[in-house]
Image (cartoon, rainbow, N blue to C red; front, top):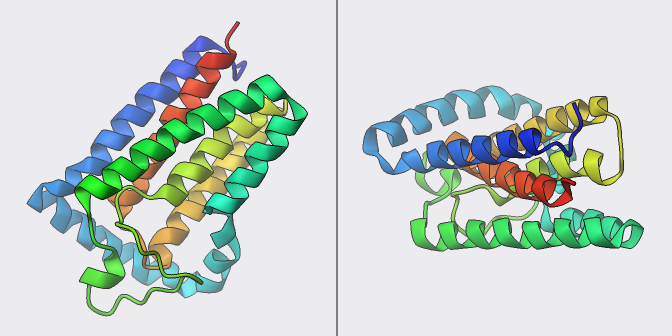
Length: 197
C-alpha cells in the first residue's frame, strides 16, 4: 500500500476521530470508573519495567518532535511545511481540550500512584500530548522520508510503547492516551491528504 494514497489518509483520519471520541468518554462516570480500574491494572504491571519506559520518555516530548519536524523542513520544504502546519493544528486542539476538560493526572487523584517522569507535568491530563506527538511522527516519518512500510510497523510499535510508558510513569489514564493517539492519527491523515496527487 502506498502511504500517500487517499484511502490510507481517510482511514487514518476517521480512525483518529473515533479514537479521540472514545478518549473523551471518560467524562461519563461509569466509563471513568472503568478507566481508573484499567489504569490501576496496567500501572501495576507496567511500572515493574519503569527503567525501560524512562529510557523511552524523551521520544514523546515536544523538543524531539520539533527537531524531527525541523529536519523534515530542511530536507523537503513543502513536505516539512505541511508537517509543521498539521502538527500546529492538532497541538492547538490538544491544548484547547486540556484547558476545557481540565482532567487531573492519575498521580494527583489516585492513592499509591507515584509520578516517575523526570519532569512533573503541570497541565491537565486529557488528552495525552505525548501520545499525540509520537503517533503523529510514527505515521508521517515513513512518508516524508520515503521509507519502506516495515519502518511504519516498527515506528507504530515504538509509539505504542511510548504511550504505555505514560501509564507506567503515572501521568496519564488509558483514555488520555487513546484521545492523544486519536489526535495524532487525525493530524497524520491530514498530512497524507496534503501529499496526495
